[in-house]
Image (cartoon, rainbow, N blue to C red):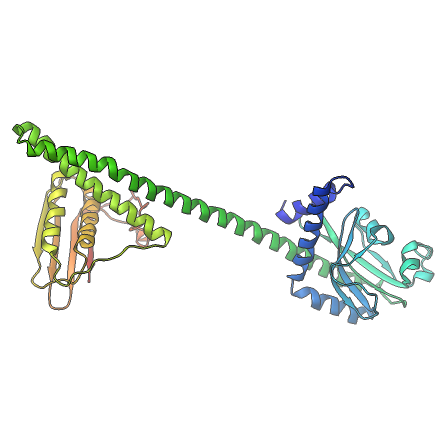
Length: 384
C-alpha cells in the first residue's frame, strides 16, 4: 500500500463526529487529494476532451469517501457553480453508490431511464444525462470518480465513450500512484541523507575528542624521554611517540574526510618554497618502522613545488599504506618523487593483486576493498 492509499483508507475509517483530531486530519487528507490532482497536468485536457466528445457542459474529478464528495478538478460550461475544493452532500450524489459498487453509471436520458427516472440525484441537480467512472488505484483502493453531467440528454452509452472514460480514470489513478511512490522515495532519500550526515558529524566529534587523550599520552612519553631513561625504556618510549604521531595523523585524516563530506572542505596552506623533502622523508621513515615490506624511496626534487607539504605527505602516506596493505608480502615498495620545470610527480609501486576493471572508478573510495584477482605489478601515482 502506498502512502496515498494508506491516507485514503485511514481518512475513510477515521472520520467521527466526536474526534476533532480525526476531523482535522481528514480535512488535511482531502486537501492533499485536491493538490495531488492539481499536479497532474493532463487532467485539464482530460476534462476538456470529455466535454467536447460527449457534448456535456460539466466534467469533474471528485474525491469520494463515505462522508464527503469533494471536487478536485472542474470544467464548468453550464454555470453549475462548483470549483476545485468545493463539496456536494455525498448522499445526494450517485457517486456514493458507485463507491459501494465499484461500477460505472451511464445515463443517456434520465426521463427515459427506468432505474434513474425517479432517482433523487437527477431531481436535486436538474440532470438529464450523467456518466461517472470510478477511479481505482493500482492496489484496488477507491479514490473517487471521473464524472460528467448536463441538463440535456446525451448519447453516452456507447463503447467508445465508456472506453474513453475508463482509460482516463486509469490514467489518473496511475498518476496518483506515481506521485505517492515518488513522495515515499523522496522521504526515504531524505532520511538516508540525514542519517549519513549524523554519522559523519559523529565521526567528526569522535575524532576531535580523541585528540585530548592522545595529546596526554604524547606529553607523558616526552617527559619520560627527557629524563634519559635506560635503553629499553627509551626504545619503547620512542615507539609510543611515533605511534602517537601516527594516530594524530589518522585523526586528521578522519576530520578531513568528515569536513569534506559535510560540505565544509579543508584549507590548503600552499607554500611556493615548501619543505617537501623533509615531510616526505619523515612520513616514509615512519612507515618503514611499520612495514613488513622493504620501502625504497628516491626523492629527487630539483625544483621547488608550490604546494601544501603536509597534504602531499598525507597523499604519500596513503599511497604507501595502500601498497603495504594490498601488496604481495616481502615485495619491495618503491616510492619516487620528482620534479622538473613544469610538473611534479609522486609514485608508489609494488606487486600485488590486480584490480578488476569494474573497480577502477571506486578504488579510491574510503570503503573500497577487493580480494579477487591475480598477482601482478600494482602502482599508484599523483602528478601536478
